[in-house]
Amino acid sequence: MGSVLDTRLGPADWERLTSTDLAGAACVVFDILRATSTAVTALAHGARALLPVGTLEEAVALHRQHPEWLLAGERGGLRPGPESTGGVAFHLGNSPREFTQERVQDRTIVFTTTNGSRALHACRHAPAVLAGALLNLTATVEAVRALRPDRVLLICAGTGPDPALEDVLAAGAFIELWSRANLESHLTDAASVAWRAWRGAGADLSGALQHSANARRLLALPELHDDVAWCLQHDRFRLTAWLDPDTDALIARPAPAGPHPPAPR
Ligand code: MLT
Image (cartoon, rainbow, N blue to C red):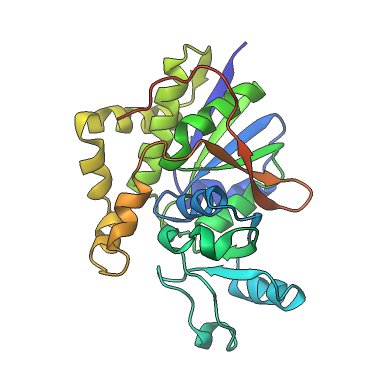
């Protein structure tokens, strides 16, 4: 008996996960523009852990208890200003290019974003939760495959209250890689939507991703423009980002060893 592949296409679907039984499920959260791409980049550059939290207040309170931790995240795409944090300065925004080795190596980072960190939080009671990105897609597929879960739940974080095209396409790319390995599996209708969207994008996946509303928003901001190209890189990193059940923080694990299916375009 293979795995069931299911998808939550946007916030209206994943917000309910807090009260859903996730026994036997491996959850992969995609917020590729940009929260999960940023988390994967930070871990690849040596961050010790990223603690996703839902609100600015929680982030600031944690930082008060642990002043040595870095504060990172965004509201409206930008680093939260002191007017929204009670005067506390955030060290980093949500641009993956800020999370260089110099800035994050061996650091614990409290991370709060509009959707991505909340989506991770919503499924944290599942037995396995990963942050997925195109940056580490093949490694993520292999890690989930090695778990042999009953159910794979691909969670598209979206933007504000809405689904986001790039997250649905990333879920579709995950399903494509999974099926190239000839794994016995069953797709729910929502998973088929993601897979067919990915296949429909065909030879112009990059074009489709770049025309998403989120990409266009970032491309219009000179300081964030280059984030899009960064986040759309395929398999730059061979590591996986897991929510540690003891600490609720994302930590890095190396990708499983073994033969790798070819990356999607
Ligand atoms: C989010 O978590 O909602 C996004 O990553 C927003 C962003 O692009 O900064």
